[in-house]
Image (cartoon, rainbow, N blue to C red):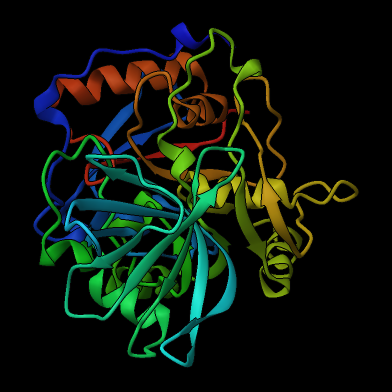
Length: 363
């Protein structure tokens, strides 16, 4: 698909810098099967906009406080470390002690180049040190994290790290972001960006879904830094899709099978849930998934044949992005572009902290 087909003009003031006052008060654009038919609603109306008995699939990844701010131990120069993915658990020997540590791939930024052996004391209430041990072929730093006090690394990162807000949110994170840039059902640590459609759901809303006979199932897809990677090639076929770790557990595969047996629809909360489900699609049983975990590089663009997902709750995505390509494949490019035009005209809020749309798969 040509990248220039995935473009639209967005007034900068429609980029949401903060979440809505409460999760359910975000706006919801309901895109019907009938071309040109759009309905304006709120997230709190979602249970009434989904078919009774549907299987609702959420991504339970938990966002890490992946931004670590600190200073070089020798010079005091400021450094920012952005954790990308954990590689291994390890140990370091320090002052006669063998301390628990973790090895990560990370981005690093400082006024002068970061060299092998550099130690960075991370700011904050936790005792945490990051040591640079080289670079990998992708240009990411090999970083070892440890606490000189022997504290567990996850606890220290949780205490010292900052919420990794997307680059288009041009402000520092604050205390409210700790809760609002996390879904209420997050439980598997590993993401460096939120599965943003899920930010709208609340526990009472999930209870209302259940009251209408809907079942909740979970997948895990750890959203990686590549979600912000722009498409720079003219044709999406040439785009180097980033890899993301995912898992579809046996109980979710069973839930999908039960839904298919009863003729119920599969509703994905967010594009990450779509990618996990479609990556685990059963090649022998249409509409089913197999329990699976690993990495996915699935790039969904117009022309893709969806095997599992029937409906999709999703936020509004950046122009010329793989996520805009995914929703265009799901609902049709003309319908998506028209919906975006209306959303801009009606002053919907865009991107991670913005409003949402509910789509039905194009038949």
